[in-house]
Image (cartoon, rainbow, N blue to C red):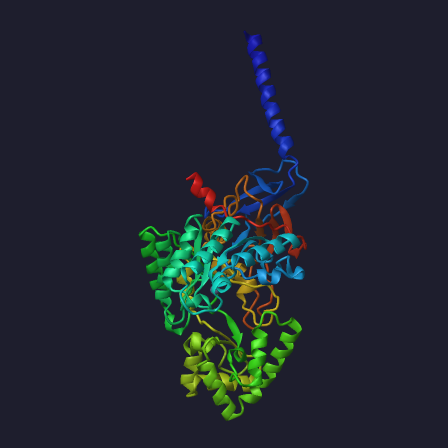
Length: 565
Ligand SMILES: [Zn+2]
């Protein structure tokens, strides 16, 4: 009997040994092991020190792995290792279709591994398909997903008509949404502030968003009138989603413009009310006290019968070449300071800028002076001031205040079109349903008039809101960049550091990570992110771009969830 037990023990041991061996030959040597990292797994759970092994593009193991074999062992003592950041609101695709910019440097250096495009009403389904295929063919530095956009669809079907769609047009638009969802879109995005999206009423949006609900998708919206009717605009977004039976996601949520200072609390109350009634609501936020920024002179419109109007229209025309655009822009930049010195011309510019003709967009008309804060100016006592406040204090008409600055400083002065109060940013950023986004662009044709959020958003949250200001715990901030975003996008195997998940990984120094981009120089890259891996391969190594493009198109999987539920 003893002998038999001995044999059985041997056999069992042999089997066990064999099993262990087969696992190890499968996994070991791992492609690489990161040793002694401070693991923040993205779930919001407390950090812990451990090793992380990567193999075949996946996270192979997390734990004590120092005795395991690997082709590469990298000690990351003192550094945080977390899931790669997911940027749920990005306009970078406009630049990424340029092969020179495809590595997506401005975002990889922030730790971003997945970018979501087609937001704010973006593209029709054929346009989404065309850009997607182009990006897949030429390669891209981050993973990417797409929304299909209401503005793009409406323009493709109805042109720029300001009227409700006919039945047949509605059916064409619905087919386009369906087509895009079949091809993997996350959902429908809208940009109701912009044309032609603005021509759509709520019922049109409900009908189109209903198509998305068949796929368990999302309704994402740049809301209709954030400066003058913020709360009712967000309410419209949540109502559309409720009626359509989809999740709601008001984009880049903010209490924007002077009239809305302090309104964050009311936004939160409204969202919580909808959530209590069962609607899934999330939002994203970029961590800055101002929305889009422009040179002051870019707000001006010339009377339509001036030659400058022709130049402006040509600049706005997508088919205009970059060289021509730059030449025309230069001519306009020279023109404004001179023209504004002439009282009669100044009056004419003021009239058309404040009351533009039908179909011409003017920021001063769209959001009003009360939204503006000057963010860059040389003249003393001007930078950082609200335009209306300053106009009142100096007894000058707000248009004249801007005009005088252009005369004195030319192209230098900049303002944010939508000032935001820092306290409102803090109210919103700490809400558990608010994730981080960049609303960013790569430095392409929009280069000169940038916003610091393009290159600074994620490191700014980790450097300022976490380290310097203690507004957010580090683990919670990382959750807002990873698993929260992944669950919004219904990603199955990204957004957490977890065995078997795709190895999208960001490694940063929690003591050094910081944004450097400012209003005056928005194109400065962030610091403190050391390594970024996309699908297991380095995009950033020791702070340097590898130049490799390991990003993949991520097909939305909401539909799988519906069928398995
Ligand atoms: Zn937007």
